[in-house]
Image 1 (cartoon, rainbow, N blue to C red):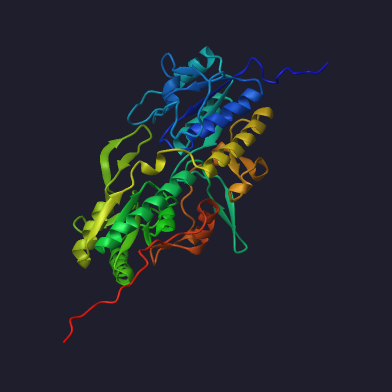
Image 2: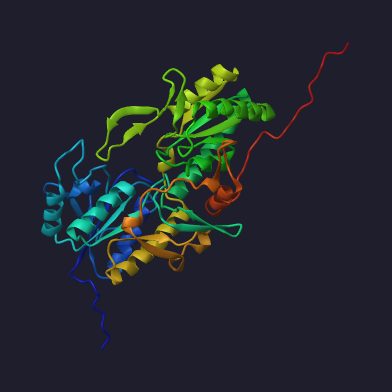
Length: 410
């Protein structure tokens, strides 16, 4: 007689997503849910991240419901709730979480998030023994995944997180679109891109024509600032228009305060101690205009790169990582996070190119030095090679014609 009993029948797996949204979270949820159902789990969704496990709980049943993984964002909603004591909320809410996991009979928890959400999950696993699997998520691409990028016989410790591929595509498109208005007015455009601690996403603007970039890993000191203006002037004179990509978390020298500072849209901190950035592009554009006498404008990409539908690369990436999560579930190997073992094109996004890392080894990963040239304020060929796996070849659009100037006849 054929045995058809599923291995985890009678068990419940819950999924939550926390922190900033990305276009790939629903894809991650859909793919994790499918694998869990194959194993016989009942599948719950925890709404609004860790907040959904506080109080009476906010839980939905995903077991027999359709789920659209192509649509961006997260249907489970999100928050920046921290279960552990913080300056903003000194009370530990861990007891509430433990109580609700027991009340709702949740046997395994899958947390989709960045360093904050998965960092909290790691602490709960270590301190309380919660069976948890972390799932990577961030458009900043700064969650350490130990993904090897092979370049010119070198092995580079790179990063590849769901959400970043779609966001990188959208930033490159935005830079490309801005070139037409830039050329028309012979301007410099300073495009601000999300990136609190790392410039991975900012680099994608070069695939749409940005030729200079500022990233958080390399602060703009007083001396660097003067050199930056020289490089900008030289680059602008070559084409009489220029796009500069700037990470929101760049530290920029303040001439009045005589110190480097960051630009915040709000001084209020979230529960993980982060202020909201915004506006450094306006500061840089204003100083370029004043210093060089060249018309400069700022454009903040804002939430646009983290919005909209999940692209094909992200969809295949979340599927491959969910396959690895299934493997972790089968082996009951908790406290781990599935990641890509190496940097590959879309065709290589398969389970055999994945691995799992201990959640204690996650943390943040800034740009490697090999990816950025701080003297020229631009990304290197190594970074181009890294991003080509996702976006293909860079494209520098232009009007394409040079007309002969006419002078009045004598």
